[in-house]
Image (cartoon, rainbow, N blue to C red; front, side):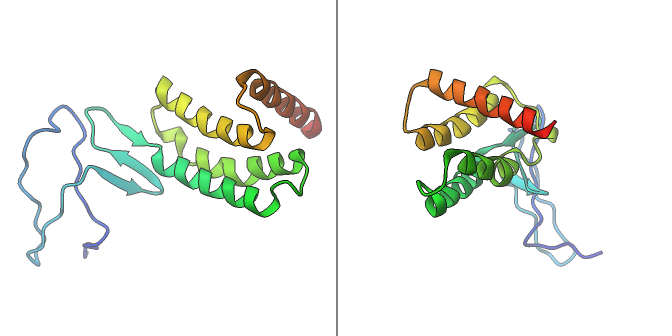
Length: 147
């Protein structure tokens, strides 16, 4: 079986991440590079002492998708339409693969911040009380709509 040189990397995960390892060499003489981050099925795994995923790429893709929607419909569509587009098109981009990632409190805060920034932009406010009320209103109206 041949190995794709362009897509194959090595990464350290565990207690010995600082240990220097010899390179893994193919039969053809090329060696696999050691990297700090790899992408596997759309999830970015980071070199760490514990299994850890990077959320930076997911948040970047979320911002790109949200700004695209906001740029196209912006102030022309109602806020309900923009929110529905956000939850149907952008949230899957942000939440893809999080089931396999062990998240800590700062990761949850980081994901929450990404969503709150879009709400702040949409409702033209920086008040977190208003943003929290908008979250509650939208979630409860969606739940009654879906049942």
